Image (cartoon, rainbow, N blue to C red; front, side):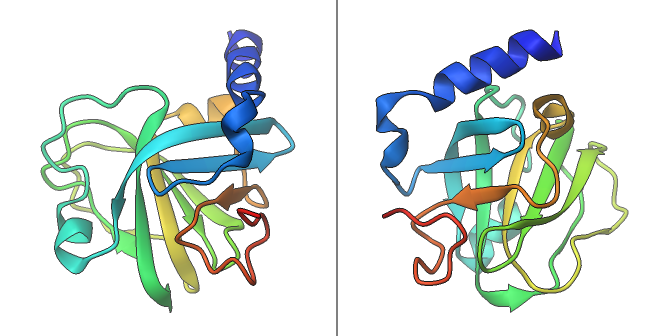
Amino acid sequence: MRAGFLAAALALAAAPALADCAPDRVDIRGDFGQARFSVAVADEPAERSQGLMNVESLPRTSGMLFLYESPRRASFWMKNTLIPLDMIFTDETGTVTSIHENAIPHDETTIDGGPGVLAVLEINGGLASRMGIEPGSVIRHPGLDQDIAAWSCD
């Protein structure tokens, strides 16, 4: 099953438009290859507070990207969140520093992404592991400082 999923992800990644960056997309690459997610961006405090609360389903190649003004300790909880999520924490270069897999719906336990977090990509629970996304993978998005991004939009 993993091989089939990876083949689909790699086929998606091979699309000619992958070189383009857009505010509603996040590209991610690592030892597994690369993939693209359509995202809603939460870059204002009210949007970050709401997150994916009350969302009943999430398409496989969709997610939410939380962007902060500067690196910080980022923490989340799953109150009023109806679906399991993977939280992919990145530093200011877009490098994945940690992943919290399969966050439990409605759980109010704090999920700590650690210090120095600039962006968090939330995707369907279990997907990061199935794809092979791990610390050291990198994301690409125009909301990152392109002068220091590990994978720039250029």
